[in-house]
Image 1 (spheres, rainbow, N blue to C red):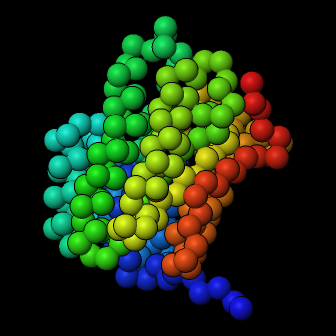
Image 2 (tube, rainbow, N blue to C red):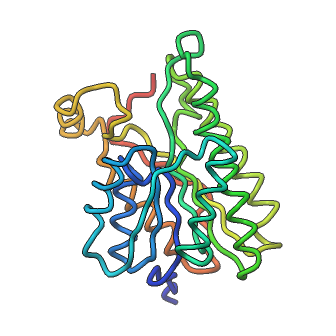
Length: 246
């Protein structure tokens, strides 16, 4: 029997960190599928670029600048969700920052607040709204860093491991009771502004199958969100063919 997919046309979707990298590519694909997409990032130029990049699709897109690392920032984000979307059907968390090892990372608290606490706060606010409208889908973009634990990524890996544990436990708490799916996408190396290497070095890595395009992760997000109502993609790990693991 052919599976019945979940159409995205008209779905109210918040994409956090949708101004660069995976988030930017995801916003464009969701709008092309007819979704009503709201996104935000910390910087106006990148926001304007993402909105222009997503224009012309079947759906709608709007955005604003915000920082989800704080309680006040998240409250503002969801005030915009209520005003512009009138609720939320799907949350895609992409807002994250790269980080160095703990002994070299001066901004490590801010990294944790953005990469982990921001996800938790957005999930909490989304759940409140989804349970009153009959259900929804939470999707968190994690990383294979939580598994490979590469040197130099202690802070970053800690945040991504936290997302894995949070999502797996949260799913057991709300999936059946509240009809809310919970998924984690774990990308390997992806070309984006988070990478320390230059654009030319990223292009070379992609050509050598050592790195993926952001659009390839966005395709996986699209796949996960469009499965049938009975199907929950719990964890999906995606790597370039020649992924460096140390």
